[in-house]
Length: 394
Image 1 (cartoon, one colour):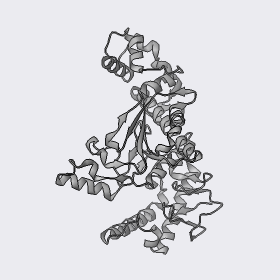
Image 2 (cartoon, rainbow, N blue to C red):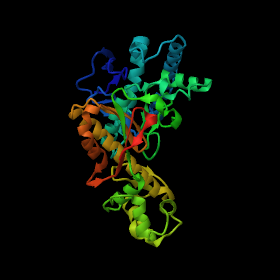
Image 3 (cartoon, rainbow, N blue to C red):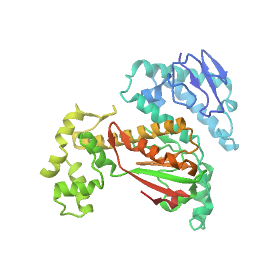
Image 4 (cartoon, one colour):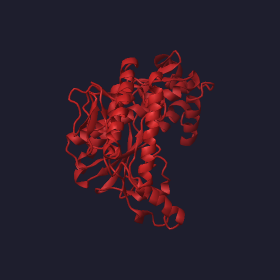
């Protein structure tokens, strides 16, 4: 049974199915809906994820296009009118503000588009991974950040600084988009708190609800991923120093070795016999690149020219491994009954709102983040009373 939810807030559970609106209820036999919500069972198929993150406008069949455009334009007009009179959907259940007759018409169109996608689009190989990722990202989106202007007194001493703080305070919710890039690197949606682009001098505005922020970031993420892709164990210690020693006899500085390595890795026109012996680019591409498309070990497929195929393969593989482990960590923390929680993710790092009484779980947390498919990725750990005061401790 295809159905639609009427709000994404857990306090506003309502749905449309079998031609009627149902409040405080979702169908027990619901089989598919458009997008994921934290209160929906895992057995449900989510058309947005099934379509690889395409928007509902992009997948709408031609015979429904005119009706769907008219319905969404009317919806946008309603939302705009709510804004002008000071109403926000964060303060109310969406279905409390919209005429029920319109809700039914809009949801029925959405049902038909959802059914079209689930019938006509093939199931992505990485569909299960995208669900797990979406789950943790939605959980983060429902948790407002705790903002404290006193942590950035100098920055808000100016008019522009105060205006920036007011904008941040008015929207403390992070709304990630796991489909914003082709390689799976997270972006944020237009109406999100700008966690990925927040200037370093402003980061101190974010502070934990609990004791401290605990941050873990993967060491030399792309290099470690290259070891994984070539079935080689990841060496302990500094990976760039290891490459410098093996490929350049240790004659270069770390920065020189790093620059030369990446220049070779992602430019197929450049050759280096020593580096090729360590990581055969040709063998990697023969394994993961075919017919103009890479398929990474987690099932993500990307159409790309050969000149950028290795770049996309390495980046997408790391991004998918990292987010897979973050989703696994979220589930483990629930199993362990922890008070600490994931606060946000920034590229190759995850920040926990950490309760200091749970310090005995730090090693377990690190094990979940660092281990994947028999491989162990190195981690840095930092600690701070706000995000602008993080100090590396490992």
